[in-house]
Length: 335
Image (cartoon, rainbow, N blue to C red; front, side, top):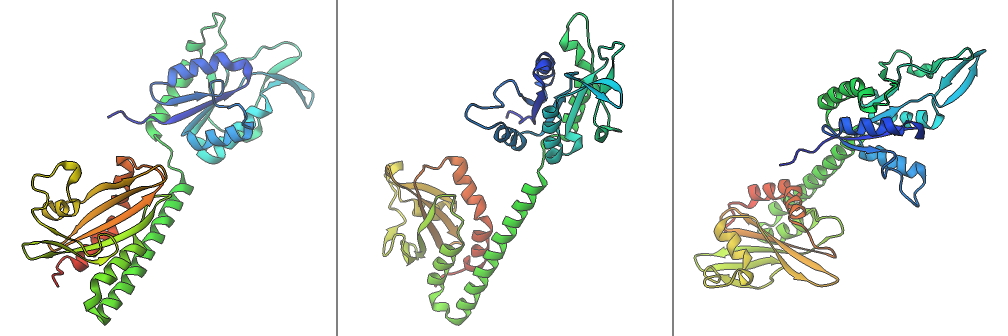
């Protein structure tokens, strides 16, 4: 399986484009690199929108500072980098933190009697500075080699960025799901104690309320199926397959496309799924869950777009805790 590489953005002034290309080539083995010069800024998109997209998509960033302008600071004439490059680096620092954002400055600057040195903002004081060579042979690959070696080490050490805000949101979402599940199962338990004869009706209602369908999908139907001795399965609650009965040998000599999946689910004791219908406006899938050795639960979900196998797998994962709990409660049900 192909290993997913971290993503890295390179920013600079236009004058440093040759160094950007050299850095891209040096880091491409350890990262998926996006230079600002190669599709980072899209037509019909504001620059800030493009930058925000790059912030969301990248795990590291490298900024190449070049002596673009001359400024007079307290009587001293120095080279400084463009404000937009500093601004972009600040955005990435704010999101990715300092250890994932690098800046590279020239090892020397053209000096004369009037111009002396390279000025960096005081906020950068005390940070490790990476440097690229200014070479007479214009070998830009060699010029950035030492700096890129240090960046490679950091990429291998830190890997893909785990956004704290996203992780917090995911944890909150999981807590909300768990709370909803606890609340629904608490209600189910109370109703089972009050009137156990209606347990399958309570079961289908609880699943309808708690089942996590994928985005743009909704739960269309629930079916609870119970084994009738050695004869077959009978639908005993819900609106999916209402009133139907299937003998256990119904699938003998049937083609794969004609099989009754609820019977296969029961006999194989495996979770199964099939596409019940597909039109230009609607797709319906039925997911089958064996519950203990006497029941099968079917969940019909409908939505506009077709689901991939990965999306179907996600549905089973999203509802694992719910079905596991139901199995614990109803796994021994027989009457």
